[in-house]
Image 1 (cartoon, one colour):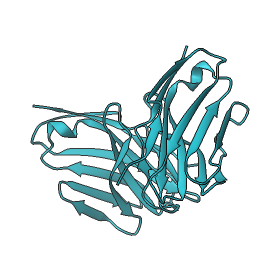
Image 2 (cartoon, chains in turn green, red):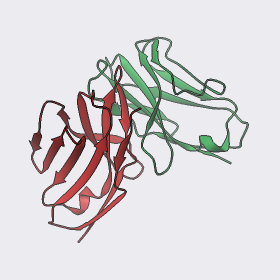
Image 3 (cartoon, rainbow over the protein chains, first blue to last red):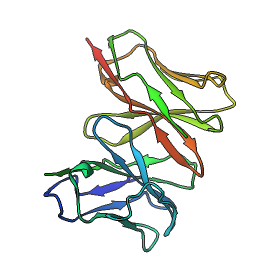
Image 4 (tube, helix red, strand yellow):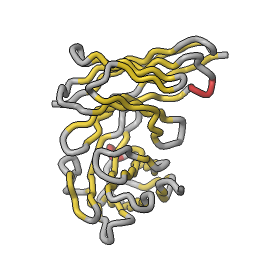
Length: 113
Length: 110
């Protein structure tokens, strides 16, 4: 079974630029999560989708972050404009249903200079 | 609010047992998890325990849960150099939100 795929693996941008990350969950997984992991900390949930609907985006900085999962499969997370404090690893995870085991992708490491 | 606390660092010798501790605050958590993260990789679920259990054993891993003190521990028997990684404790709150601790870096020396 293929795991959660993410791209790119690494990205370096200057502050105020835009960036987008892509996630392809495990086939058949209805629930998709985006986490932000700042160096030295545990992952923090940004947004959770159930199929193509948003379940929880309470911790998403909506003035600059946006995410979509239009067809209920792949998802993209965008930052516009980026700030220095957005430097982190962005992890995507999926689960068959909510509260089920979450499978994590390898993450995208973003460096904002 | 939810908060998960872990010690930041643990160093052991190969063959010894490792014990990683965690405290949590959400008494309504139904599941508690241990994840492993190796350098440059995502998180891998190691084991989990239901809140109505006191102990769970899975090969070299033993999880102990003290609900009264909201204390969770992960014991790794016969620790190997390949066990060197960061270990995260996490609790489920709300709909299905995972709240993670800051992670414990385990260093296993030969």
